Image 1: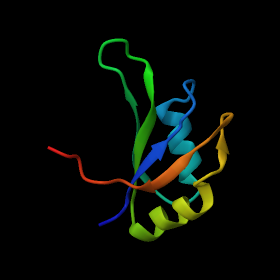
Image 2: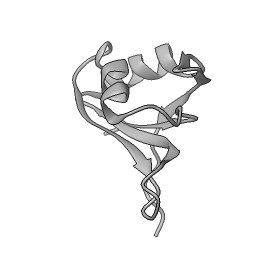
Image 3: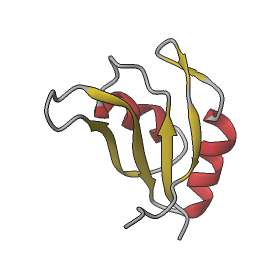
Length: 84
């Protein structure tokens, strides 16, 4: 299933809750997480959002890719599997 999304260029001030509320407009968000540096705890500027269905994920990509969110133009696309 392609319902896990990569979100890039996220504002340093954004929280997981901000990300979830942004995507909730397009359907049920099952998880929203901004990746943080394991030493400093600061945002690394990207994250992942998982939508309940592939259709909702596609709607979110279409609406949000290239749009401004908290002062930055975010990139939204299907997440690729983690490389080993």
